[in-house]
Amino acid sequence: MSAPAKAPGIAEQDATLNELPLLRRERIWGFWDYSSVNIGLAIATWAFLQGGAVAYYVGAKQAIASIVIGYGISVLLVSLAPCLPCGRYGVEQFVSMRSVLGERGARVLMVVMSALLAAAWSAVLAIMCGHALANVANQVLGTKISAGAGIVSVLAVLALAASWAIVARGPRSIELVNRFVAPGLVVVTLVMLALVLTRTSWSELAATPALDPWGDSHLDFMLAVELNIAGGFAWWPNVGNLARLTRSTRSAFWPNALGLFLASVVAAVVGVFAALALGSEDPTLWMVPLGGALLGVLALAFVGMANVTSVVAQSYAALVAIKGGGGSAVRRVPWSLLAAIILAPAAVLVFFPEAVYDNYARFVSWGAIVVAPLCAVQLVDFFVLRRQVLDVRALHLPHAESRYGFLRGWNPVAVLAVVLGALTYALLLNPVTYEPAGWFRYVTASLPAFAVAASVHWGGTRLVLLRRADWGGYR
Amino acid sequence: MDDAMRAELEHRLALIEDPGGAEGALPPLPLADLVAAVVGLALITVALLWWAL
Image 1 (cartoon, each protein chain N blue to C red):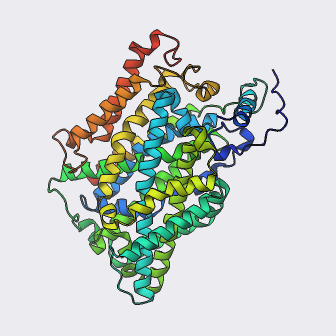
Image 2 (image 1 turned 90 degrees about the vertical axis):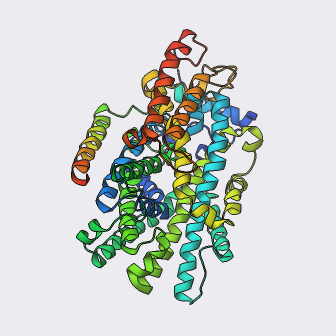
Image 3 (image 1 turned 120 degrees about the horizontal axis):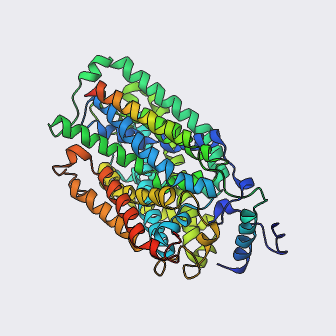
């Protein structure tokens, strides 16, 4: 069968800006392109802040182990799902989730993920950018701007405006910016590492105690591991729509090992070392003491800019998702206007800089409560239950006509699996107080949440959904 | 979904579903890649636990 010619009068759609499935010739990223975007996404101040948060619980050696193990586990899992379904079929991430949650389930998920998590993370990054620029002003202009000052919020809004200007031009501008920013960030990180190690010997670092541990070394190590597993899962809402642009499944998978894993690990380890050496978890306070006035200011300015690139990358992913799942009314909204709407909640949150900035670990934990079970059900669904085969047409049909219709657009089994997974997480690690339960010290919280969700989805699907062909197309 | 969008979607689906075409799904990730990633992570984990704890 040959493909029909395009109907006359139909304008060519840029599918990188909406939820239409991408053709192979439209995939614009090879291995190194996606790697540079990935590194730009990974090395923002949030990686340094992650290191600062880990330094609360453990010293240098255990921090390195917890970061590598924690990120390694969760980055491997998000590299499998959503990266491979989206990379293999060129489908938008939340469209791909219709085969898991149903059309309506995926739409609700998309709104929650894109609107809430993207807003929260954009706000954190923008505030950090504001902190960095305020510290630059303090050094260069002799001002005395505090972390909670109003000017920090104004600078954060400017960072969001710069992010909007880039993301409004589409993914090619993201690639262009990251081609320059990503190598620069690697240099800044390595220079910081060299400066820390010049100032403090390895034996001194290794002997430096954690900043604020619980006092039970095993529990502190597991809390650090959990923080890093959750940190890796935090990429889940963003990476599918980036992997969708790659030209091979290897290009969708392995760059995550370079960017989300290796770059994040190096930056987080540098963060741990700096936090231990300087006794502060705030990355924007490390640069000048480490590098002196000139080098410190340059590093601060560059890291501030790097935060903008991270806001851009995740805003792009959220935009594509909302374009895809928002219905025809949203689809008619111009890309640049929708970008402004996506970033608007963050522009409000940045006016509460201390409340947002000081709750980094809780933000990470709140994300993992939902994302660990979601990753589990998607992974089991795609690799085990569907054997890596998706029906692209059915993904784009209304639920009443689609084999992925489930029950009125909802897959109750997947929803139950996610809820039970989230409940498991909350029982093991209180997301409000960050207080662990007894079993946490042996199993963490994200991994049991993942295992419970995966088991319930697999078992429930085999017991219930496999009985009828129109319940999700599993047979 | 408006008519133009639906027509574009249909055009793309036809290209993707064309068994003789070049626009179909990419081949799956080779199993060896996945095994290498899992084994590599397991080895690193064991080595780091031995070193750090």
